[in-house]
Image (cartoon, rainbow, N blue to C red; front, side, top):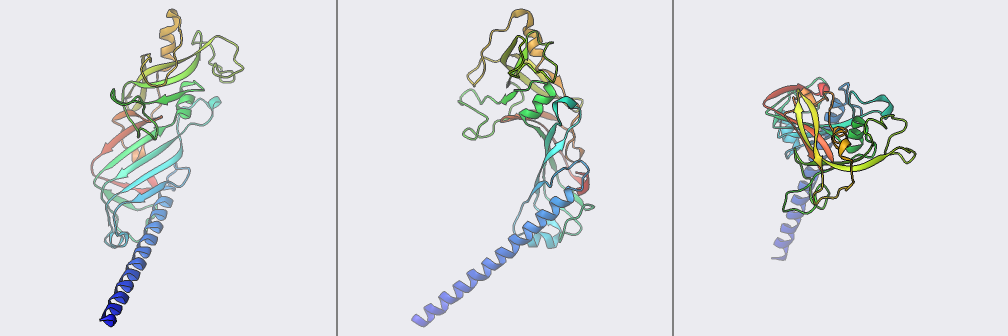
Length: 285
């Protein structure tokens, strides 16, 4: 009996060791595949840095052999965006995409010229508050997303990421009257600015107009989320709101997917679009 038990133990240990080796080989292959995928995407002219890539599904080696994968997620940060006032610095955003199940002719390695045949693409272009501030020319701009009425707080890790298309809160400093203080070398939110100014919180609606992100201020925000209460003279209230309203230039989207909605994403703002089945080249991301 002890001999049989010993044989069983040895067999179990050998099986676990073999499984561990197989898992290690598969993980290594997945890491190499994701790196190749990322480097191929980086050949796109507008991609500045190697994107982050995660290929879905397990095991990777069997997917690679078949040339069929369960999907992938991509995040390319630092992509230069058009139309930013030169004096405010370069505007950069994050282009991302989630691919549904896709096929590629040679799954053993990804190259820039590979064409992926995918069941779907969900793409986004995301702007952080710093980038949005450069477009709006409101240096100290912040973005927050009020949660549902029954939720206290939103937009932070403690609340999860919250998104909404209307009632997004922008906070920032503008000159009084708002037409003053647009000199990029002397913005009203800078400590050296000696003209009249006011820091306010406003509610904005986000939408897509002719493929571009449209931001429209609808009123001053006085709700339960963190905000700034300030007295704004009646004669300039409309002009102050107008400083938080803008239609941005058309922004790039992954594989030129057309955006169909705009929304906040915690403290960021993003365009989002979805497509059905598509065939796309990696170097045209």
